[in-house]
Length: 332
Image (tube, rainbow, N blue to C red; front, side, top):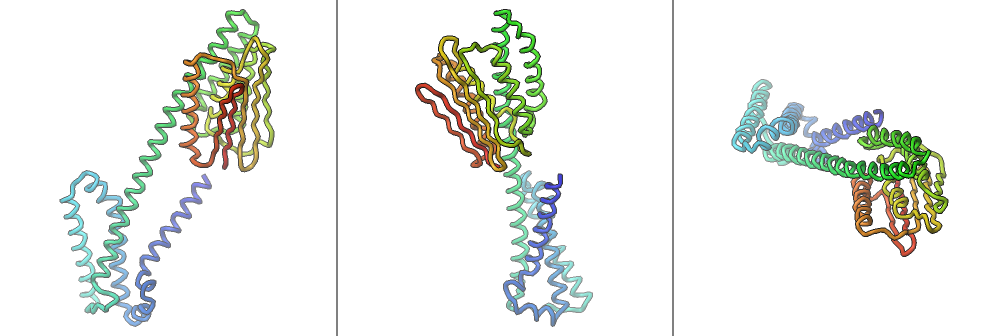
């Protein structure tokens, strides 16, 4: 919340500075105009009145005219709005000149064209800012919809794989079936309560991975060795939920055998500036349908990473003859 307040505070200061620069336009472009304003304070006041109307035009156009007329394609009504605003502006300036008994004699530097140009500049600025923010909002909505769609594909994928594990235990009448169901309950609670969030703490995600790996260990024989090594200090890291699980699922799906010795190595290294994830498993031949399903899951994960981190991550997947290896680095 403090970060958000600080951002709004800085943004407000920036906007104020921009409008001050806008008001000081004649002084910036024509420094000698300072003496002109000091010698004729009435002209300075007249200039400020017109400038205030230009600034008002920016905000009225941004908050009222564009949504009410331009977006709804009421261009004639918008033209009437501009004419009325111009008339009110001229009426106010004329009334001011009448009240102070002032006759405006424009110099080369303060022609009527310059005043209208500044008004046109404010008008164009309101259009630019409005449509830029509109574009960014559309991008945010699109990004949010894509992320939700990707998450919706991940959750059932996880559930089906875990249920298959417990089903296998039940068929073998394993005494670990009850504990597996309890761990599945914990994992599903995480899926329900955390997966819809944009970010979770790294500590929560690591606990989730530990539970999943322990659940998978229940079905393994002594032919498969699983190594989980977490190094570094768990700092105030936040990451997208379920961002690692697909890689680990694939390792258990395609790297487990009851006939030959296999290893699944999982490493996570945490530092202040980066988070490194590594998984490597021996490839056991599987049917092409399942491999195709795995590639879809990996494609979804890459899409999520692209949407969330952009160029602040690197993902290396090595599909060799004997081993399958994944290296993922996320930078702050």
